[in-house]
Amino acid sequence: MISLKSENRDLESLSNLFYKRIKDKIELKIEDNKAVLNTFVTDKTNKPFGDFLEKEIKDLITLSLDDLIIKFKDELHDLCENNYQTINKKYTPFKKALNSVLFYEAQYSWKAYQTAIEIDVNTCVYCNRTYITTVGDDSKKFVRGDFDHFMPKSTYPYLRFSFFNLIPCCVICNRNAKKAKETSIENNIYPYKEGFDNNTVFTFLPNNYKDIIGKGKPVVDFLFLGTDEHNKKAKKNIKLFRLKEQYSIHSQELNDIINKRRVFSDSYLKDLQNSYPKLLNNFEDAYLLAFGKEFDLVKDENRPLSKLTRDIADELGIIKNKYD
Image (cartoon, rainbow, N blue to C red; front, side, top):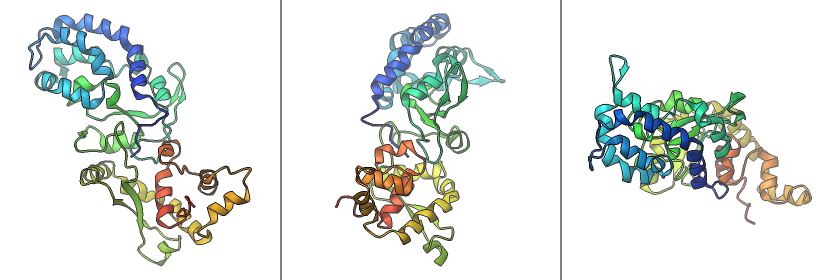
């Protein structure tokens, strides 16, 4: 689990840019559907829903998920639960109108490729196993990652177009593992707020001698070093995204790290840096040369398996002299 919080990523500006791109169209959609939506009223203040959307739409798109829940859940939850339905394979008028206003499925209109480029994360936020680098653009589509609704749009349809509810991820995590299963800020690691960081780390469990010498199939597992709250959330995410199973296919990569420990001395990376000072400016450069992965936690999003590699290398003592 990678955190999308980064000093190099201005999330507030990105959410406003996202809204600016859809502002004119979404306002027209509200106007077109207002008559239908105004036949429904909000839960607490009994405001016509179309008028309410017209006033609050920017916040619905751009506010952080915490703020959205505080501001809108009591006002909209029952309204949507009671009316956002499919009956006899047909959308109710409410569902049809709300989907028209929050036109997530029309991804060409809100430029999903451009949004992925702006968020600029190269690996799946949920698993850090798979590249989700965007190739192409909205006019010449080729490949990009999925966007998962962290709080599912089937349960929270008013969040179906909220920027901070859209998580860039891989197809496996989104469509095969998570699907429409419900997650929440209270119960799960939420990538716009936190990641596994150094509170949940990879470890490996050797079953035999071959596993110890890097020629077997050691089991990937996790250590939980954070608060009780963080550990509970992390365990739920590991189960939900089947991370132990997903990482079980990477026994060869794990063996490579174990084999490097057998070859490297404790000071190998520092010696490598000292031997090539013009090529390797710092410890991170030496680590990248040796492992082909990122050393800095905040750069895990750049290369798959960076966290696995660093955590196991740290456990084996390969990088224990990094601060000497």
